[in-house]
Image: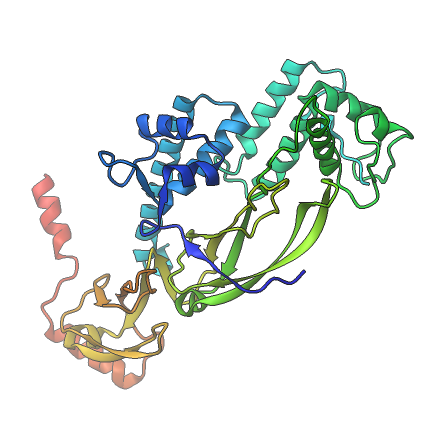
Length: 108
Length: 317
């Protein structure tokens, strides 16, 4: 079946999701998402505002959280710890990639 | 239908207990889970492991699997007569079906057959795909065609593998590792459940000239010694076409010269920068005249490129 070309949306800081949307798209419940917020795995754009709004990157984080919870049968605080560490690893990998890009090709 | 040895995939005996199966799965999941593994084939391996565990962890599914018999992995086989009837799906067909879909179908059949249960709304499956594009395609925006074989429910709620082609417009602004979401382009939902989404991960092919960091680009800029000392106006390639760059006098090796807005476009309309990294190169073949000029320079220059060695040795002692 040939589909028509579809426009795609970048999952960046510019894109926003509500808590309900994150729950629907990630497979986690709103209660589980609130726990992830409590444990610091994801942070709403303005934690003091109501209702919470999340940037597009949070969808990637909570989808990872859902996969890990199901695959390893983890508790929310364990999931939160792992996704926080994974986010940190991805940040460091991006920094390392940026530094490598600055090295002249012959010494990389 | 092709046989899969679920016990072999998990590395356990056919007589293994539930705890041993769980332990074997956890060990392999830690090794191959795509979120924690660096193995390039980890995702495929994890799918196999998860499929095996999904069946063997459930006593009913495990019994159904055991009743299929034992064959060589990949061997064509047909389930015994009355197998479907015995395990809750009397209408199943094994002609164009995958073993995993067969067991997913049994699970769905069990839900349908539950006492007083109406049809359960099931969201469609999300698909995750990596699209490899060139730096030029990321700069301009592009259209990619993805050919996937995906599980889909038929009208009777049974899973089948079907080939699907997706054409996706990747807007300009892509960079390595960035993710796109195509709402509703995943698997079809069942019983009124929403359709899944398609998640596209962008991977950039390495470029012979440019290196990528976010939306910034880095380019090695070879300069002759006299261009570095005297300054020069040189032509440099950019993704938007060549531009002239003014190299200031006394440019040293490793110095970064910024070409503002000549990097990759960003999703919100701004652009990254291009950094040209100065490299001083010397000619590999020199004429008699050139050698003479270098001799004159050596005799007339007071420059000592290793002067710092002496100072550092003195201050350390």
